[in-house]
Image (cartoon, rainbow, N blue to C red):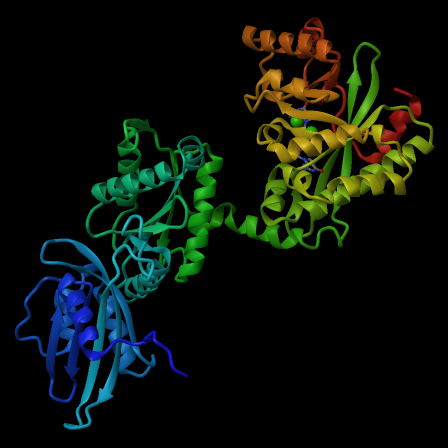
Length: 557
Ligand code: C2E
Ligand code: CA
Ligand code: CA
């Protein structure tokens, strides 16, 4: 086949391009005559002149940045010992001008035809800031998490061999999503860069700072004597970021959640250590953010993993059951509605409260199956009670935002109501204020569809999420449940005022108001004065088993 286009360069052209790249410091080559212990080096990446270098080991010792030296030597040894079929490596060099550059190495041993010596040919590429590379994060020029894992593995082995203690400090920027949302991704990237530079500035040079995916960073402290040293690092970080970062004329405040683990004390497995770090960070977030948590195995980690494994079979083993808590209308003193509340009794764990397992089930995605079980059980019970002729307006079920987002959520509801032959208006869906606040267009559509299908909607835990009262006008909801935290302090003037204005709004917009967690006569009296007549709380009834509720409904209370 004849063609005018050429698919390869002739020798001269190749030579020119190669020399150009060599001069730019993009590539370098070296040859190590293993039999004669002679080295030929041609590179301008590091900017050094090399004399008296006889072999590849000496060369690596001369150029590799001290933090990566151990791994670089290991890569070479692995190849020479036949563990890899060619010589791949990656590390940082510190150039003569002090710049940190990332280098990629590809090499192979050939037998020279003339002199019969074994020669290692090595190609070096300067890949700083390029995607070609597996070792570093191009935005921050830091070690990335893949490369970090290799370092960690090595560090664990060294710590064990030398009887040392190392630490991992995992950092998560709390409000980063907001920064991205408010200022855009490019600005977000600038924040990450600035943040990483500030961290490098604070940290001692003996630590290793790595960039993890998203807005996460990891610090490895190779060696310490006292936990206090690590706490000091965490405090130093918090102290530093009390000041805002200055980015393009904007003052950006950074909140951090930090999780700390120790190796080999907590684990000698690098993947497990990262899991522990993740868990410690989530504990920090739970305890209100901007704090650090030192991982403690004995704490909740094992309970959480046990919950995760036990919850899988809990439905099949009939470990879940429902209790029902009455909501009472105090003007008539009657039970108007019943809230289904899930309970879990497990052989190994004993009783686990929904406050503990629901968010774990959400995290693992099991909440959909569990939520469907709750729905069916509650609907079945509602149908049975109606058949028995009991009078009540609704049965309410708590719905997790994860269930709500599922395409099959409404079809499931419809088919369950059909199966047990109950009118849609008998079912009230409780959605928390937080879920409503995080509502995107898609969820607004789902809530409207639910209302159009005749289901009732209650907004749960109202008053905890700072949502705008006015946003309630958007949906014709049926019930607003005022959170226990407001009721607990209902004697305060501020809370009375808040409550009163909600009652006024409720009358105007025609939704019912339920005060949650009413425990005392004093609270009841204040609430009655403020015009509230829907009460749910221990003062009247605790959540009760089905049979107890039947006795109450039988009496017609
Ligand atoms: P919630 O929906 O706000 O339910 C009210 C919680 O307050 C219940 O806790 C109830 O037992 C408790 N409570 C009611 N009256 C009083 C009172 O006077 N004093 C005190 N101290 N507490 C009172 P429970 O049953 O432990 O449920 C906790 C949370 O777990 C619920 O909060 C709800 O968010 C969630 N949950 C419960 N069942 C389910 C379910 O089937 N699905 C989903 N997704 N979440 C559920
Ligand atoms: Ca509820
Ligand atoms: Ca509630």
